[in-house]
Length: 230
Length: 294
Image (cartoon, rainbow over all chains, first blue to last red; front, side):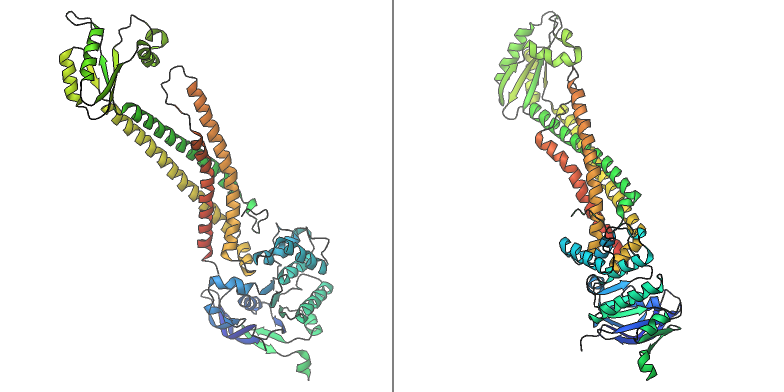
């Protein structure tokens, strides 16, 4: 078995001097796993994802990412870890002044890829997600579903080892939502560890993966539906 | 280093235009200050080399009874001068040369008037130390109306004046540099504040602080190049204008404001230096500010 992708041990998170929004979170993500992250609005799904994609540091507890204790990783070490994590943000977070291709190209350029590789790979990926005719389009001219696909393309362009998605189907209709989930399934089959935060029960039931369920800031790991019913 | 595309939408910032304009003004002032510094330095050098190592003796045209004629007193003075230790040579200026000296003050016609009582000036070249006091006493005793000037006071005043101008020019350049640095710091901080969410997003995608700072550096470099070249062009136009205006004056009271080719090249370095300073300032400001981000 390879290295553990994510490990949380008794992790707590509070913002400033406020109450803990996450309490005693303990779980591990083995490589190649697929989890749904569920919970009511305000349960802390986004906060948990932020800890996973290293936007925040925990108030207490241990977090390891790719077997590295992040409390021992300084600012200079974070970019290398973050480049191995793809994130699909709830509100896409596309840069409006850049074209679809340039948005997707960001992680590659940061990694120092050559411009010819950047154009070739981004064009190929955007074609794969059905946006081959919108390479130069600005995000503001794209529909919600198209923006979502650009955001997903950006999150996977440099083949991350861990893919995190925050309500990726929240702004699209069920049909597109289903297509996106199939896309994540494909990436999962290629070996990417996937965590998708969602409250779309229909999708969760359609794709039988274990759940990380948040309730009142505490995490419960629920097995896949097939195991629950066995 | 110049990028055609910025991940940060810095080109839309109003602070960008501000930096370009400030740089243009700063480079204009710094270029003029540097040109002034070089002109005054050259002037002081010419004065120094022209006056140091020399003594001027004036024999006044006296028309008093019992006083020998001017030519006779000039010969007396020359004899004494040529026999004085430390004097290499003594040459009286011709009437034409003397006329040229007073022409700027009196005009061409008056200066060339043969009825004008003009003293005879003797240019004395020294080859060592000359006891000017003793020489003056000997000349005074030999004939009346003879004055000795070793330019010490004049040279001292000139040196003081040149030094003051040089210090002022350096002061202007330092102030201009401080103002330029301040404006870049302000613009970069404003840019970081305006685009903080984009910077955070880039960080989350794995951007290093250096990657983010390069965006700002490239942006600032582009602005400073534009502003700096504009400021340099204006400064050169000003210098050329001043040179032409000075050359047009009939009386050459103004110092020579021409610059050597290497000095023009040095002026061209001003916008480049401004760009270098701006880029370093941008880098330092960005990296320091990003240190406080998660």
